[in-house]
Length: 148
Length: 32
Image (tube, rainbow over all chains, first blue to last red; front, side, top):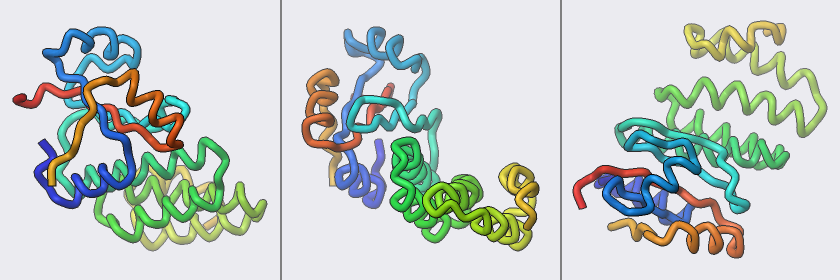
């Protein structure tokens, strides 16, 4: 599991990794607590134990890395750490531009900037960026009201 | 490199809180 060196390194660097195996006696208890009856399921929990992101099903290394990064960005956003959230969302777009996480990250990077700076121009700028890339994504539709 | 997966999830949750780190909880059916 996770034979890719980059994935293993990323997990070691950024998380306390814990595993519940389907054959473990505790599997039912934790799968019910976190509503995770299917495997593989990865839950990203913040330090307080609150779930911030969920990855269900197998993903190739690049996509998994992008989702783990996206989860850390969402965690920062949920905890109102706007600058860190924007930086982390931008990082997803820059490092994993061809993944499904990228357009979602671009959207939330704009929102993070708006929330942190109170500057509506950040939304318009993001809307314009969606006219140049990821035009076919659902996130481009969501950003289309921002006057890009 | 191999990931050092913790099996005691309750303790891992406590450690995540005390160390202010995120926890990655893997529900797995991979061969042991």
